[in-house]
Image (cartoon, rainbow, N blue to C red; front, side):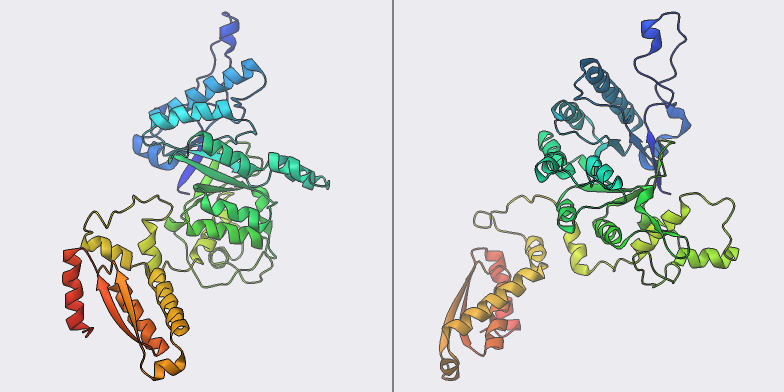
Length: 420
């Protein structure tokens, strides 16, 4: 595994301390384990902190609310002291204004630590009702307790801070595909797969059902990390698998939704090494980790176009002012790598030429004048000429450009591509 998700507070630590009420009581257990257990590089790269699950900054009980707020502040300050890469926070409730206030204060102060809010993909009440075989709550109640709506409200209260992300908690049940697809546009940083999200295939190995497979694969394509959560989570420790750095044998084997007969590469390797016997020292999470790695290995290789888009994905871009400023050659080059824009432009010009000039007029040699205002380095001119060739129409193109440096490129294209 690449890192652990571990509690920030010591399991034996209790708030408030008994010594605060009874001076004769023994001193409380330390708030947290010593930071000398690991070096600073290990803390910052191999551990993600997890706040105490009992914290409720919006509790109806004033003492509980104050105690929860104090505990959250103390744990986040400890995480900042350790320079942790990220901290996993509890899910927000329907009314989480005080919780958001505390988190927002730390978002402004933390420089290198991200905050991940754990949000279940299915509301706990709905999941519990489904487990008992009871009907789902009404749509009005469902919307009020919809985890996505709660996250959207919480994120808005934190003003959409870039260091605030979401960790999706995935169990046995999933909502509809349309509801799951809403998360594609959110800053999902991790997906936590609970033990009950897995089912056993015919060989007894843990696999994910087909809907879970599709969603996890979609998240992996967005560089979302996968956290494996043990049964019961009694230890308070989650183990994470960042599959892009996993060291396993990869083979081209198609997987189905838990009903396949072929072994995964990890299963085949284990059978070859142990004769089908389970290794005595095998980590209890190993089989699930191997399966998640297998899913990652099946993702198609990133295309060159996708690699170009990675640096601009999910970021607000500063608007350019081409009428005021003369763009640089590198900026033109970046624009021209967006092939889909020019394909659609060519199709639009093609449809326009066919609409304006009939086949009879085209045979007669009717000429259409087309002006490209803001021609840049000529990609729209090329697209227009390709559309004319495809439609069999004759056009005369006027390229208008105010950038004198780009005009030099256009003049070179007139000679090199015979536009004159």
